[in-house]
Image (cartoon, rainbow, N blue to C red; front, side, top):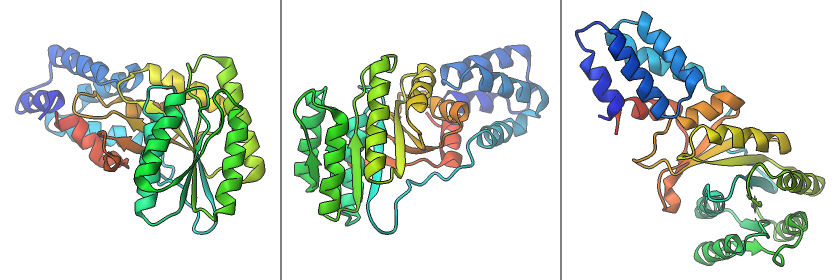
Length: 280
């Protein structure tokens, strides 16, 4: 068991005292659940019987989350378009590649748009993955208009009768207003050519509460429909996935647990919360 598990185990057969509450609050904050979530759970701990506390905390966390559908919206027929946004360094381009690999393994025809034209490494990364999985990538010249690359990718995907189009976008610092204007332009141009079926925000799970500010800025620029939380390996505190979903009301749909393509998995709240509370 992890720190939460050890803490709850020590409560067996004893009343919760002020020192226990202080320790629990510290654990909650360190796990990136945020002040609001933490305060509510401390209040639960004050009222709940200690043998029921884990169940009560788990229930409260689950009930605080979005009730929206968590699956990626894939059309049964025609072209499905997925727009992927987020700050550079969060694993955004890697998430695009992992999604492409997933759908390719399902037998779907995939086209990628390397619309992060401001970062040559992003284009090269997608091209490397494409060689590995056999998808198609549409690129443009360095510093060319990202919206133009995205528009060309839509045309290429339609001509190829592709099933899935995944668009990687620029991700410089989220506080740069020009980036948000560029993202809004990409979304507008793509929407004129085909429906955008999913807009995923990629959040680095090690970012902490700053990730919520990032997500809110991107939500102001484009219509986010889901969140993918990356880098949730054994060293990550993990509560940020729950905190950002609650703050925005946008469901976490995917979590990244490692470097391999198969390490991008569906987010299952009940299992995730159980592991957060009881596992290292």
